[in-house]
Structures are given as C-alpha cells and as structure tokens.
Image (cartoon, rainbow, N blue to C red; front, side, top):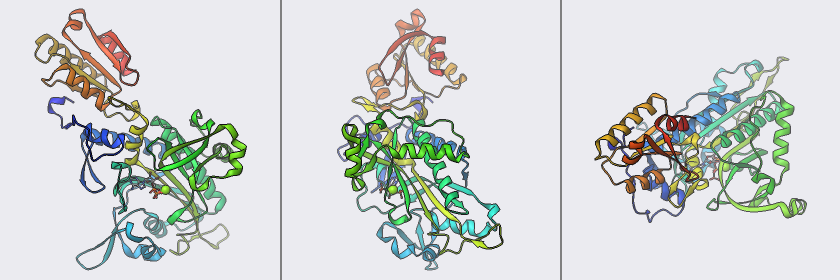
Length: 438
Ligand code: ATP
Ligand code: MG
C-alpha cells in the first residue's frame, strides 16, 4: 500500500484525553477513533491488526477442535428470561425495544443463544461433545469505559461454548481450551498467566482468567517467578486427556492469583519467588455444568435411553482488548513495536528523497519486488522530509523498515532496520528482500 493514497491520520501531539500509553499510541498512530463514550471506529491500520489477532484466535480455536459459527449482536429478551438472567444482569445490559414494542438487547455474551440453538438440533449423546465459537461484537454499558479499547462499551470478543455428556467430559473440554489459550497468546508475543478466578455473573465452579503483566493493568496479581520464563506448550494432542491434565495442573500449581484470591499459605510456600505486578485480563474461561442447560431444558438421549442434561463451559478472549494489551507489552519512547505475527504490515518502505528521480525509481522497483514476494509493505512515497517519515515509521511500529536513499542506491544498497532492536544493516536489494521475507 502506498502511504500517499492511504488513510493514516497520525497525530503529532500526544492526546490529552488518553491516560495510558496504549490508548495514546492507538490514537497517535491512527489505529482507532472514538465515536461515542467507549465506542470506537477501527481505522485501516487498526483494522489490519484486529483482523490478524482474530485470525490467530480462529486458527487456535480450530486446532483445539472448536467449530466456528456466527450469532447476531441483537438478541430477544425472551431467551434471557428463560435462564433468569434478564432481570439479574443489571444496567450493563443495553436494552432496546423494537417497533412492535418487543424487548431486545445488544448481547453482552451468548450463553442463552447458543444453548437455544444447540437445543433445537442436538438429540442424542452422539451429538456431543461439541465446542462452538464465534467472534462477534458485544456491548456492555460499563460504568466507566476507559483506557480506549481496553475497557470499551462495544468490543470484539471470541466466545466459545462447550457441550459434554458429563462433568468429566466437560473438564476435558475445559482443559483443551485452557491449553489452546496458552498457545494463542504466545503466538501474539504475549505471556498470559492463568489465574484461578471467581466465576462472577456467569456462575459455576471452575474458572481461570488469563492475565498479561503490564504496569497499567487493572488487576493486582501475585505469581511465582517461574511465570517470567515459562513457555507455551506448543503442539499438543488435544485428545490426550492425561497430557492436557498435566499441562493444566502444572500451570495452575505454580502460584498465580489475582488480589481477591491471594492466599497466605501459598505465599509462604513460594517464598522469595513470589512476584507482584499489575495485569490485564485478556481471557476468561468457565465450567458451569448445568447452569443454563437445565433451566433452558436442553436434554439429549443418553446411551441407555434415559435423558441427560449436557454440562457446559464458556470461554472468552478479548480480541479488541488484545490490541491495547499488546501495545502495553511492546512499545518504546518512539511508538509501537508490533510483534511480527500481528503487525499491520511487515515492512515500512521509506523513500528518503521523493524529489530524486533515480531514488524514487529504485524505491518503486523495490516496492514491486516486495509485493511480488508476498511481503506486506507500506510504502512511504509521500513528498515529506526523511525525518518525518522515520518518525511515522517508528510510531506505527512495523517490524522492519527499509530505507532507500540516493547515496545507497548509487552503491546498490539499502538500509534495513529492525524496529524492536534498532539494529541497522546495509544490504543489496535482493538481500533486503530475503531478510524481511524470512
Ligand atoms: P473485566 O473483569 O475486565 O470487566 P469480564 O470478566 O467482565 O471482564 P468476561 O465476561 O470474562 O469479562 O469476558 C471475556 C473477555 O472479554 C475478558 O477476559 C476481556 O478480555 C474481554 N472484555 C470484557 N469486558 C470488556 C470491555 N468492556 N472492553 C474490552 N474487552 C472486554
Ligand atoms: Mg472475566
């Protein structure tokens, strides 16, 4: 994409209405704009990041055996009356009336809807186990929307729902999601720590939050120092119950808790290795048994002919919040530093001298070659000073910068800079393409 034809409204000044660094940088780098309190438009660069995160989430859900569908944002209040949550949910639910005076709502979550969809078609124990998911916008009328997309009112969530014939099956589905979450965050360059959590309004008896450490996070967290170096499990056999159980119990055995759950006995055990930080909740998983299936009358025929009530779990990932969380975890004074996996483009190609014909021709040629090699490139071909182009490139944080200048071109070289380290090397055109494509 040529920057001269793009829509990338960067801000020179730091916006005063943003309190935390990710929010400031998302506004400055032209990723989002607020359109109402806690509601954001995703501008082209921000949308590309959102889509990449969404795609990683999708691939890892698919790998863990979950099946994608798409449910609507608007829901009928009647569904929520069946579960008893319509009155219980409170003012966070945006309630709407249609022209026939029917009660509707903008979904804050989808347990009721998925239960009713599954109820209509699942007949026998052979239809289970199943885990279904979608990636869809949610609305929660938060009392205090703040920190940009981190605590919005409208936000994008991946929510998955599992249906199993009994508790043992449901725990297996839960463990499968737990392990796939560790891999999902690792692919985005994040280390997310699973913490035992309260189940809150979703209800149930087994729950973990996944927390990314960041000084600006909203939760106080306590964890074992091992978590600073631990890695994701990588390729695992999701059907192998013992391996999954071992990974999950290994992860949970290391001390990790949010403030409310802080346990002095564990603290004594952990000793010197106890660490305290702030954290951002990027995911939350629940096992809640028959909480929705029972009141909503979801039943299937068991192997012996008797009816059984499926055990369910739900599994959320804050897709739009992750954009902010990744920036909190990866930035410097000059701007964002995108991990390769979620960067809006891999390369920022900078023509130092748009007014120099041979320099412009060389940059155009390199741009065509990068496109042909399948390297996602943002080409700064604007008629601007080199300094302004460097500042923009650092601000928007693409992993690689390739600088084409008249002196280098005369010698047949360009400069390649790695945004994360600042390391610069001179390479031939072919060498530069090979470097960024690797
Ligand atoms: P929080 O405790 O941060 O309010 P929650 O526990 O109410 O979140 P869940 O119902 O667990 O949220 O939703 C699943 C995920 O959706 C959360 O882990 C979080 O990443 C994301 N999420 C929840 N609320 C918001 C919001 N207002 N803005 C952006 N993302 C959110
Ligand atoms: Mg939560």
